[in-house]
Picture 1 (cartoon, rainbow, N blue to C red):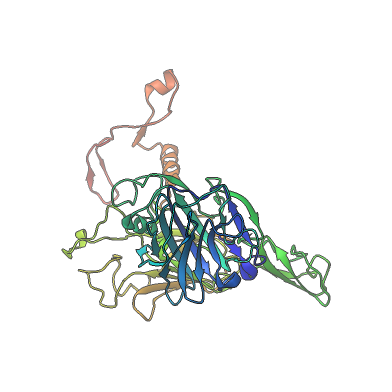
Picture 2: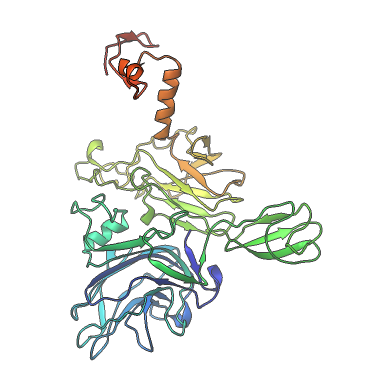
Length: 472
């Protein structure tokens, strides 16, 4: 559910998001996940900018002509300029990072997909770094709005601290900025300002966004058949309009002023498909995953397993010593009316070496022909995918359905999951069956309180004829 900016995914070249933070002469780190669609305004589409007048206080952007990431910063006498290389192909989603020590003239550290890049000094600064109360904007510069980013802002995070190279890599790999989870050092870096995750129902939990101009929060189009709900006009039975930030097309027997015909159908062709997964148990490595053709009816969702902090890889080559991923679970909003292909990475190289394998999914290779992952509209009732097969490269397992989904969000898993709330349902069912595994304590009757407790069971024999000793 990213913000779309520019004429393709947003409204115009003047699209931007104003933040509640300003430049600092102290320590600062910015990390952003961005999908660049085109070169942007003047070929200098802004990731971030603070420019109160005619000169930058600070600006972070990609220069299309040189294909380099540039950071400019105002200093007292001579402004500083630094850059790092960018891969030739920047299509799709990538994570860009930068850490700045605003107290002196040292070069910033710059990162691409969690990896430190070689920084070149374009202009060495002279004098102290400058600051002011001008707001920071994402996706453009003020006051002329002529450096618009053309693409999508997936998420943005900031710290009043200089993150180390390892910390940049840890965050790229899914470390939690508010806890010790995922950090190699065992602790999250201090100075965390906040993150704008731009997720459904959780767009801006830290209140960093002051205002949004033009940029569209890409989500499901509200468009249905019958009388149609997309605004527009037309004759001859067709109308094109806009609904909930995404293009919708309505067609039918006779066009009306609401952009639909009787018995017509409206489809959200520009709805953007996204990928989410619980960081603590979903085991999908979001930073290494991507979606291609996200706005089409046939997107491809490519996923990688997430390496947990308690699964450190060793070189022994034994099963128990190598990082494992037994299960994956996530969801894809924005798939109504679409037939996406899901690709899960099982191997990192065609050698399929157990000793060096990074991802290590413990399924039989090749998979049994009956194996298929599962999907659900409500995370309760699960169905097998219609198709499942190895990709020709031997690295990915591809799975998909024959028919289009009929709900916006679809949950996916490698096998039927057991949600935590099912435990309560299970206990309730045992109570209803007067199970000997649960007993009602006398205190519950005499004094009130919990009606049931888990207590010591009696010796029993199970359905296989095996003796079960008493236990709690």
